Image (cartoon, rainbow, N blue to C red; front, side, top):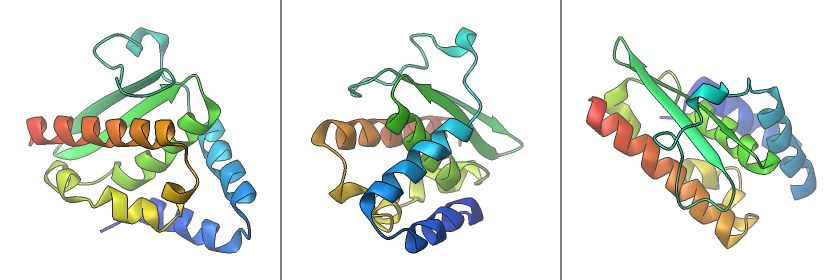
Length: 136
């Protein structure tokens, strides 16, 4: 059920030998992402439960889910980019059905993130699902 963009990240991870290379790749994904407009960094878009500052700005156009996001931490910005590849472009009704934990496990992220980062990642996934359920 993963998008082609997420499958591309999975393929990239298969070529990267060690976790440090994978970690750098996640950070590079975040650096390549356009920054979220400061006007969208408001309490309504802030994700609570993250150790760093995180903002997610979702939208649904023509039944298709999309979100942009930003963080003050490089690795978290990279995780947002990974989540965007997992969810962006899906029909909004499919978003809550995505097994995010299972898909992210394919990258081995769960084994290499601190407890705080894992909790923040879950908070972002929960927010994405909530918005999609409301919009569907």
